[in-house]
Image (cartoon, rainbow, N blue to C red; front, side, top):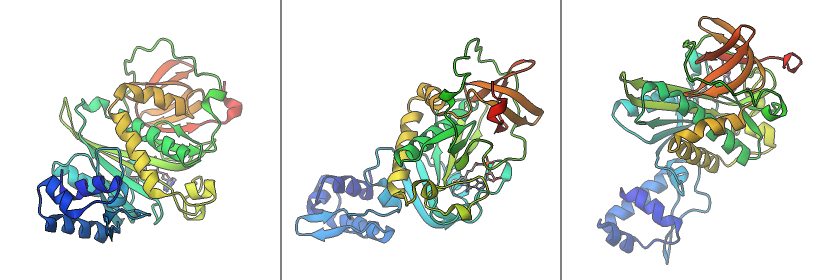
Length: 345
Ligand code: BT5
């Protein structure tokens, strides 16, 4: 473990004596002092007291602040602004890095799926994680679902009742899936893909029944049998006025009426993402519970045309199962619109 991380860990449990930490780590006192200075430069203002170094009361929204107390195996890199955290994360991925999270306060070239624009002014929680799960590329969509669950949970802990629209939108103000019929129609799954379409459609900010508070963009490089890296980009409209966002979008600030502590918010999101990634079998059940799509009438625009019917399940690795007039079909990618409740079953 490097001195910086060891220092951050030690600061969690009270004052840290520089000489004692140097002794424990087998590094020089100067190395500890340098690490302290490094944290201060990042915005994590360690105090010097007679008892030793003490963590700041407000650790701040910075790399060290997010890593402080973080119960997840990630190293954070923070920027005031970047074109896109996904682009920066892809550079890390190309260099062989793993378990790195790039965070920016503002993005000037934020991307959605299919090169759509993602509006990302200062005050948002814009982050991209680089992970290297030992799975086949076909299993990659699972991590997008995990990110959606983690994001919904972090929003809920922040007091905002968020639900997931397949595959990757986190919405607020949507009716609960459990309040509708269709949840129990999960019989007859055979896990065999019947359609395998790349994303298509023109993208709608929210779809019916909810305002979009977050979106997820996963990018991947892989060989035939193994993922090389995944960059999971998560964008949450945190402390942003709704007026600065596209129509149909909302923010945590708009929903709560005050600002969220982004440091804690991002840390909780990362902790949930790490937990879910470590337990792949738990991802789909967690996603189903938080889904706003299951039980609804949907229209999914796929590359081979629209699929209209009732969404009845999500199956490994993340396909939406839709009951249509002509039978049951599985959709692997596309833009999903929730149809009017009046049309629902
Ligand atoms: C997404 O795409 O929802 C994925 C968004 C991923 C953004 C994160 S931020 C960190 C990382 N770095 C990046 O550069 N990207 C990722 P999609 O489903 O295609 O939705 C895009 C559509 O949502 C746009 O066409 C707009 O209609 C709408 N939109 C744009 N900005 C928005 C915002 N801030 N909030 C809600 N909706 C937005």
